[in-house]
Length: 171
Image (cartoon, rainbow, N blue to C red):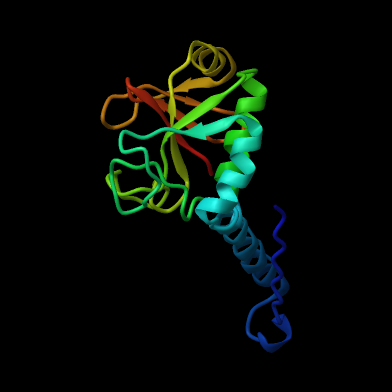
């Protein structure tokens, strides 16, 4: 999925700042625009499944459901397209034949800007092949504030081992 964004700035109406200040302002706007749109656009459950399932990525939940308002479900409703792309790229790079998502955008996860609810995170089931790939391919960084160990990919994405699953943030 490709999304193009356009922004038009009219500096000719700004007369009381010099060119250097205008360029600094433009660089700041572009930086934050990139950050805001880096993870793409929200997808529906159906759109996310249409990309994930053909790539060998399935969902599992204790409730065997996809309702975003039920914490026993695994929902993709509102997941960001960049998160879906990140999961697919990770699966392909790891060499895993399949990948299981155990947590998506459903209620019951921690709040925050880069949260499950906002579409930035998924939980992945442990499997030896992906565990080894993360440990051997990514950089071990400081433990999360709750003490769980973390690894960072060259893309900036963070893989946190919460013991029962990987809590992954795609930026």
